[in-house]
Length: 280
Image (cartoon, rainbow, N blue to C red):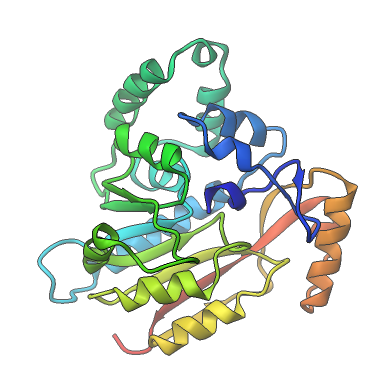
């Protein structure tokens, strides 16, 4: 999941680049260092949306004694969790992890500083956040510095949730996604919703180069209705090269979209899909 989420310089069969190697590091410095030149920005756009949706979901009385948790799918190093629960911006995170001072630290030193950094910026309305990603180093770091309350590496494209994730799903009320829409399928969402024990909402930012409809159908089979404003898009990142640009333009057109002013201008763009139960 993590290795497929954001894209990069390693080509794939469909023409989209990917950076598998930046997700298996013991800390997020390579992640931010590689994505900074590409102006990867979708977590920034998701930050206010996820905060609003999480607050609305937390306000819903579903008869359970504890606040519903957020499950961030393809969470990598806990970027969405950091932005959701802390007074920090994506720009500040880029500056922090690419700074000369940060570059000289060991992973242990960086983790100790990050734990203090995020603790000082913890918001009073913070919600429990679980992370799901196949990259063990990434989720371990996010868990160690306090960004995630629990982390899981189950690959739901290949199998069912393990006992730990299955227990955690009992508390999940909101699933978020920003980086994995090109790679996780309806299989992952079906597995998650099959294990849910409380009403689950889904808030997802998905590239316009892929169809979200198979997941929409899977969500509908679990009683969720999905809405999307197709006229509003959110930029994700710059293309790595001309080949990726041509791929994106062709993929958007194949799905009936118009790349003018968006993909044709040099960036991937996403749509925001909101899925909630048919009945309160």
